[in-house]
Image 1 (cartoon, each protein chain N blue to C red):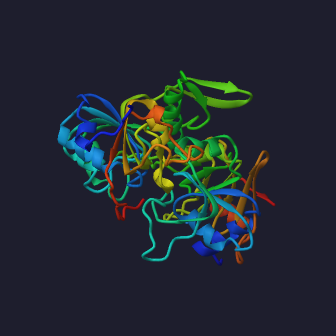
Image 2: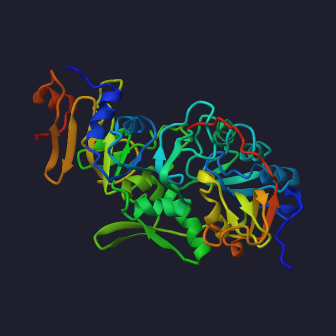
Image 3: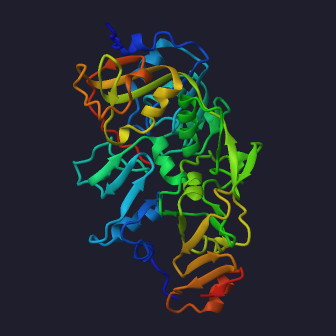
Length: 230
Length: 212
């Protein structure tokens, strides 16, 4: 019998190696798998490359991982926020590397990795600092920049419900990067608020089919009331 | 001259957003446009973190922090709204499905180049978000900004000195003193506020202008 359920967040991230590339879902705090990040912090892996839209909020989750000096490099679109003081300090003192990627290119590079695409031409960023040194091409009179896929060793994501085959549904705008990150990593771990039986999720409404998910941790965590802005 | 305040600017932009349009309003000043869309006009607001059919802010106490906009502020979802993941959200932009985006700007050049993500300052932490995707993706890119900086320099310039967000992407600029259309033959100014002559506007901008 297939069961992707793992008993704890700690067990779900126990094999993350030093130097691993880890995608972390979430847009700000919405969809951020805080319990998995906390478990990764406990676990101790270091020199991590983190892929996220942001670079941590306040002192929890990704910010806590940064603060503990576990992160070598952040690949993201929007590190600077009102409460990104942890990242800001590390970046200014040269203690963390930043690869800044336009948000849509970040999403498409992740999607491309999951879809087996070797590279793609995108109009976004053409003629800007973020395309410097990259190959460009004119296609049908328009200028494009060549971008490569972004693969990961692990994806840590948050969903609303999951079953033992790894099928997932999300909640509102907490979906954000979850489905594409799930497809782009060798091992995808989903923390879910609710574990459900096979068949409880309407097949017409499954957002991430279980083939993209290796581990599911049911946590029954309430939505956090985080007042982060910007 | 009677400069428009932020709400008046938002109202002016809202006037030009037609029924049925799919629209993304950028963070900051453009967000105010939503407050001035007439209730009887059906306009679908897109927020790039994954919602089409975004409604107004919830009442105090009703906030759901998993229902937020691109500025990470709580919003609501209208009946008929849809949630989607990030790759789909940016396909809506890049694929040319979004009719209008309204963005703030540090500078816009007379060719329509946009600079709105980075001042280039040495100690600034660069952050781009979806600005470049919006600039290159929406069918019409409208900019909403005060014409002058606090120092009195025009933000409509011959050539941007700040790092670019997009090349030749802006089609119209709404300012606190006039509206500017960027066309093949140059910049056309119209809807000048009361008490501002075309010659005075040209002097303020310091760039070639056509009187529309």
